[in-house]
Amino acid sequence: MNEELGNINESFRRALCELIEVCEEQRINIHTLYKVVANKKVAPMIRGVGNEYDVFDLLRLQGIGVRKDEEKDTDLYIMLKNRTELKGEVKQGKKDSLRITSEGVYVKIKCMRSRTSGEKRSKQRAAILNIDPALYKVHSDQYRTTNFDIVLANIENTYINLELDDAEREFLELIGADKDRKAVWYWASSKDLISTSKHRCCQRRNCDKNCGFIPHYPEIFFKKGTVNPELPWKRVFAKRPIT
Ligand SMILES: [Zn+2]
Image 1 (spheres, rainbow, N blue to C red):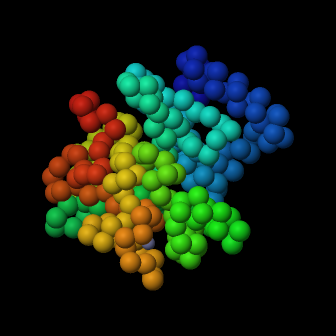
Image 2: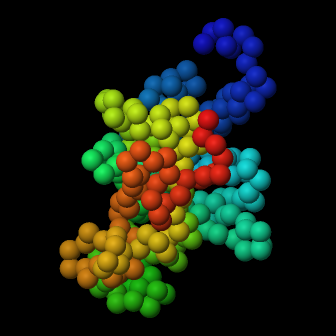
């Protein structure tokens, strides 16, 4: 590391200068910052917010029109060729959820709000959505298609803390996750994630499964031996070769 610091590149030097400035402004001790970042409660939050900037840069590098509006709840806006904008939500995988079966590989995406709404807010939101307030209340930490158009999900969280066995390592190598972090991004339309009685099911008790809310942990499934997931999920930049 010390050798690298001897000839750090310009972008790293700029990032370091920004970091020093932010630490001064926010009264954060830069000498102990690495211990704070390593904290098990802090690291996932930093990774989560960092993911929003990572996918923003990835999309921009691919020539996709993308913008952020720090004032709004929406993580990012994606501009389509016909000038319409998609609301994008950036999510992480559910911790340690990578699961391999004889059919293939499953990973879960954490797709829920961190806070539930109170009684008054629930009633207001139910009125806006024109649904029964009681139905809204039991789903108040869940999303509907009105919240965003697409979800962009990074699956690193599903395996980075696991002690990987051979099959898991083989899968990550297959999708390129060990070499190219771009390969671990997937996306789906919110309309393809909502609960229906036939496919994806909302896990709430007293729900008829046709509620129109997105389940807490939608699953991405890769058929055994395949690089790309089954629909409705798609790999971001699927047209690019992985290596
Ligand atoms: Zn439901």
